[in-house]
Amino acid sequence: MQTTKHNQTTVTPVTVRESIVNLPLDKIHRNTGQPRKNFDEEKLFGLAKSIDQMGLLQPIIVRPNPDQPETYVIIAGERRYRAHCLLGGKTIDCIVKDASVEQSEIVALIENVQRVNLSYVERAACVAQMLRTRDHQFVAQKIGKSRDWVHRAELVHYRLPDVGKQMLEAGRLTVDAAIRISRIALKEHRASAIAKITGDRLNNRESLAFLHANYQTDLTRAPFPVDDDKLLLGAPSCATCPNRVGNCRALFSLNGDEEIPDDTCVDPLCFGKKAQADWERRVKKAVAAGLTVLTREESQREWMPGKEFLKSTSFYVDLDAPCEFQTGGVRWRNVLGTAEAARIKKYLSRSLINTCHVLVKKNDLTAALQRSGSPLAEKIGAKVDQQIVQSRKNKLDEEVGRLVKSTVEQQLRAKLGGGKLRRFCLTAIAAQLPQVTVQPVLKKSGILPGDAEQTARAIVNAPEHNIEEALKELAITLHCSPDSAAIKACGGFYEIDLPQIKADACSIVRSRHKKSPATKRATN
Image 1: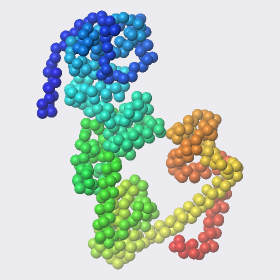
Image 2 (image 1 turned 90 degrees about the horizontal axis):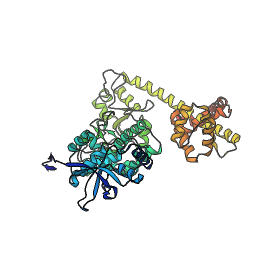
Image 3 (image 1 turned 30 degrees about the horizontal axis):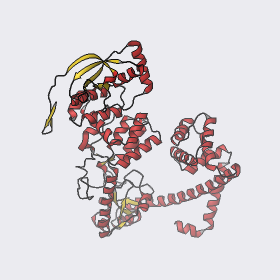
């Protein structure tokens, strides 16, 4: 028996008398609280055959039924009982435990959770049932698992959606992924994560990478103060929040898995709301101080994806970034000096990872450095001139690319008769690229590949949305746009003279710009 006082559990030893008897099957009742819910019929027939040949090697465990005298309830061994019933037997060997209902339930749960062939979902249900009357330390000792294992099993039982448990039972979701999904704060996010992993048939490594990228956020890189408990109404500070890994460490240690840092947030929605609230607060202060705020679209053109620094093609400078022309990590704000920094026109911008920065235009920076007599003015001016030249070249290249794409598509349609361009594009890509590249993408997009002939047939029969998805995935793999991926593959496959098309496009674009002084002035 167990008593609890001041959150401390004391287990009082109980002497349980037992004996072995042969009891009629009709006097034995199944345990309605049996943790095991699924009994494989094929395995039951196999067990029945084994018992028929070898006899019952281990008696089942029962207890007297206080509600019906001279009858018994199964504590452990329901599979053996069911197998005996299949054999048409009349009696079965039993160990009768003279124990209370509570004690027999504990025995049944321990006996079940220690079985090798019990699924993780069923074990988690056993653990959750034991934890209704026992603490984590008691359960961990009884079932021979760590306390962290018990915490995680309880988490999966209560927080993994039913569809996730079904996928886990079916082998389409790994235990590690199920545990990490259960940690996600919002129920709807847990459901969408399961749909993504099972829908895309991600393996364990891919599943964990996806969950880490989308549902775990590094608080050390938060664009807002993590100790601010007034930033978002109704939300605690990140430092004290239960969705910070360090505040619920028992749930965040997987055997054989990397340690998740303490300063990790598992509620990306709350993190995003805090980032937005902090941005709005900064915008209000910036406008009051006379700064110009760049729109989201304007900022996207300037910042490197996933980074805290500007693109090399940007015409802005981050005042708090290190000056590339000086050693020692001196920041541009210090190079500019307090007087010029206060005088120059400044812009507030948000990077693609939501960090906030104060920028100045390079032309304004050059003028300010010239006023202060700094030798860096000439270097920055030369760099701006190079960027202008490169920017013009990039625009011309983009125009050539669009013309090439249009011409290739016209020729392809003429050869193919129109209508099914993208499907033929994908067929061409699959035929030209290595199978190690193509097959995983097709499979991920719901198209089951095989040899060359089987793959072509699968593409022909695939729905249009699968074709579109496969082209996009292949484009990502090839580091180019979906259209250019199609052009590269189909151009060679259908014997289209791509070099000649490019040469003609370059001539057309050059002639356009020579004929149009207005265009040239606009570019300058």
